[in-house]
Length: 115
Ligand SMILES: [Zn+2]
Image (tube, rainbow, N blue to C red; front, side, top):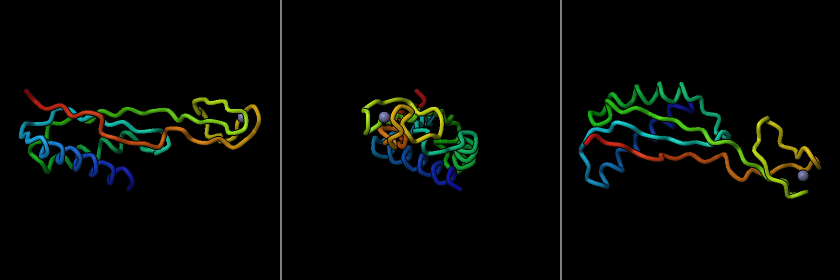
C-alpha cells in the first residue's frame, strides 16, 4: 500500500531530523505537504502514521497535519498556465498537451516538539 510506505518515510524523516538536531523531546505535530498528483488518501495516510508512531516513544503523541497542494500546469502551445481542477491534460484553449509545473512533490514541512 502506497500510503503505508509514505507514512514510514515521514516517520524516518522526523526521526532523522531529531537525531540530527540532537532533540530528545516528544513530537507534538508533524506537518506534511503533498501535491495532488501523488493521489494520496489523507485518511489512509493518517491511519498508517498513527499506527506506526506507536512504535516510538517520542512520536506517540504526534499529530499528523496534511496539506494538499493543487496541480499547476502550463501549456507549451499558448503559454497559458493554470491550476488543474479536472483530470484533463489538454489545454482548454488550444488543445496542446499540458506540462506539469508543480503538483508531484511531497515533503515534511515542519516538526513541532514539546517545550
Ligand atoms: Zn494552450
